Amino acid sequence: MKNLTRRLLPLMLMVLLVCGVMTVPALAAEEGASAPAMYGTFWALVPPIIAIVLALITKEAYSSLFIGVVVGALLACDFAPVRALNLIVDGGFITAISENAGIFIFLVLLGIIVALVNVAGGSAAFGRWAEKNIKTRVGAQIATFILGVLIFIDDYFNCLTVGSVMRPVTDSHRISRAKLAYLIDATAAPVCMIAPVSSWAAAVSGVADDLDTGITGIQLFIRAIPYNLYSLLTFVFIIALALMKFDYGPMKGHELRALEKGDLGGLDNADEERGNPKGRVLDLILPVILLIVTCTVGMLYVGGFFGTDWWGDAGNGGDFIGAFGNTDAFVGLPWGSLIALVVIIIYLVARRVVTFKDAMGCVPKGFNAMVPPILILTLAVSLKTMTSSLGAADFVHDVMEGAAQSLYSMLPAVIFVVACILAFASGTSWGTFGILIPIVTAIFPADSTLLIIGISACLAGAVCGDHCSPISDTTIMASAGAQIEHVNHVSTQLPYAITVAAVSFVGFIVAGFVQNVFITWIVSAVLMLAVLFVLRSREARKA
Image (tube, rainbow, N blue to C red; front, side, top):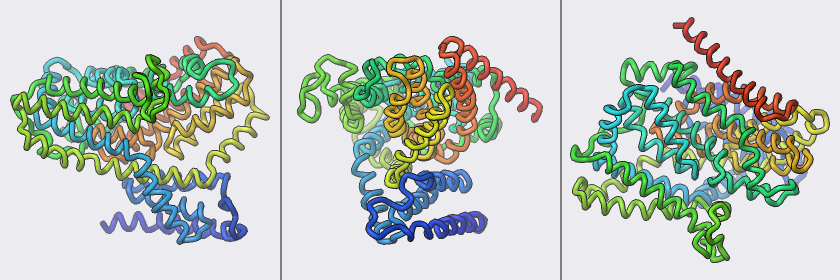
């Protein structure tokens, strides 16, 4: 505890010093100004940067995020303490909880389902099956990757479903929870961003449909898929890394401890691992399939696929993509998971692998398991509110307009970097492409190859920043799905994400000049493999 205090004290003093220095221009603002003195400047990105740096240094997410929220509120309120406190409580925490109540309910319901499957012995049975049929660590990693790619409807659903299904498999092969969390995170947002039928495709289409691009939003999304280098190269990276059988950075330590000592680094309690010995693989597979079906139907229903939508307006009867474009995942996912939970309880009680009393005992157990991600998500959303209050979107808009005047063929690479930074600092890819897509369409000619490449760079950068960011909801969900300390997940996956991002940056430079998808892909893929061979050689020399 004393060591932690000694480490935190200089960091707290640094934060206070920075805040004190920034008080001077802040207090110089006119009384009653409608916007903060630092609105629309680089200082809009300072609160998340402080939170992220503190989290990586202290390995503690809650206080780091809270300090970021406090700094953001002080900047947004020109250091008026009462106004800042009101913004933190009302505009931050209360708003975050009310606006995300749907996803919190979904998290709790999914936690209860996972607890039920564990108590029924379904997870243990699947682990025994996997031990016999998936013989190698490589096979376990590839199987996790494949399942992640197949669940492309929604990233939240992807993270938690893949985690609950594949934990017994990866655990049996002594794959660390840090590696599992990376595999989950790397096949959540990236696959949703290249799947034409997903909540992400609907979001992009909705933003692009109102702009003068010469084509519809969904057509623009589909044409941008081949140039989405970060998503596609992430898949190449995962497969190559598994086949080459090496790791680097902090991940290497986690994998060595898992392989040599059996220390997976997870959060599970011993009680959660014990289940009914009569459980069968079907007791896990059937609930997962039921969950997928009901959540998909729920999202379609809310979007109006079956007629009138959730809000009573005319729906998108029979229009699959249109229904996804109109849906609200925060309503559809709880809708589907609640139905799935009721049916799963009936099925497991009827199978006599759990009693009704045991099933009800899983309700608080599932809720308790989801308290950490709910807390982190609340703090992260509150931090995003502070960033928005400081005009981060306006700052990025000005940066992009300035870049457009001097760089043109390099612009896709510049757009990629700007999107990475904005998504990393804000923790939201949807917010990032919502800001940048209108700017990109204004820079490039309508229906041109450079427009397609620019949109791809924007989407790829949004996914990359979201993937790296400790305050991203998808990153938080991946930690919950793998049952690992959130900060451990962030620190281990960051070098991997940065590696793919660096190669993607070079790829977008090539794409901007040659404007040919095949040449871009050949150069990017060869460079990705070359980097991995160099890294493996370096790790071999260290051994």
